[in-house]
Image 1 (cartoon, rainbow, N blue to C red):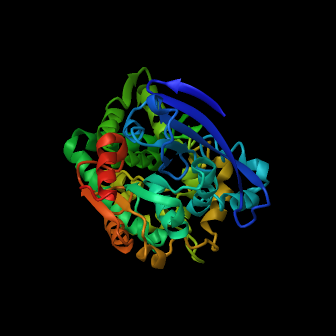
Image 2 (cartoon, rainbow, N blue to C red; image 1 turned 30 degrees about the horizontal axis):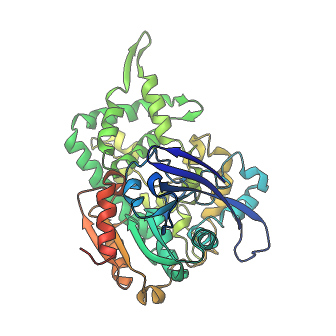
Length: 431
């Protein structure tokens, strides 16, 4: 272990060895990383632990600087473990460079089948006694981290003192088709709200999409397509995302000796926003996190999009309606245009056709839950369906909700200490 300081906090790198397959504890082992954070003024004290599970899938825990965002509030009473879930960050990262070590696409897909919430929770349960001496800890789960927390309540509630969930109450039984059938109308509402806020972006978006359709440019090997441009709508699910998208569009074109072209600044911004180089597991496992039982996910977002023809980029450009952005959806073409994903196309296909996913949630156990749980549910969350979240909240005994339109999906980041304070007061029945 190595420790170091940032303003107001002492950080310690911790590494743990866990089985790749928890059903075979004596088999292959992988390394999982967590960053311990404790207030500098309390570094020598015995404090309860809080483990933070990041959203995703595929993102390592946020790299805070000092006590920013919600971390400062947590450090007033907790020693915090910022966990890089397996395959992310420093926890045996899985990407186009490392996965060939497993063998071909079949071996890679079989390997990645062990990187869902069930395995992440088993990792936590091996790590917890090493840190707490066996005492239960508090879990804070953001988005997919909340999915992991619900799995935790289903499979190992004895390890939990209290659970805090922000924008992450999953449906207990919805197939991926159901998830995206509910998602497209939410996305359309977010696009309509963006165009109402920035009406000048209606024509800008059409012009950009038309240019991409005609010229098919590249940026650092990333093919820039109308569908890829559509996917920038993922920004619209965050508090500042509409404004970020507007600023991205406003400098898209420049005049050159050869006529009007897409600016280098826009190309690079689009490539950066659309690339999965930093989080390839998001693309590989995004539909797999909904897999339960023998039914394949089978590119659900792509298939279900056919039920919503208004999202067809080519048709939109031929007609006179607005060009609609998408977001929170993964499609086969992602693995054609993105150099970070291109070598993993067959692996993704095998995961999409997989039919042996373990069931993730236990409704009977959740109905008998005794762990204090509080969840922030965002009124029109673009990423996680609000109606599904509220149904799940009602199915977990004792869970208390805070339903709010004050924040978007990233409320725990935008609201920071206030959001964490509210959830702690709810979970402790102080509100």
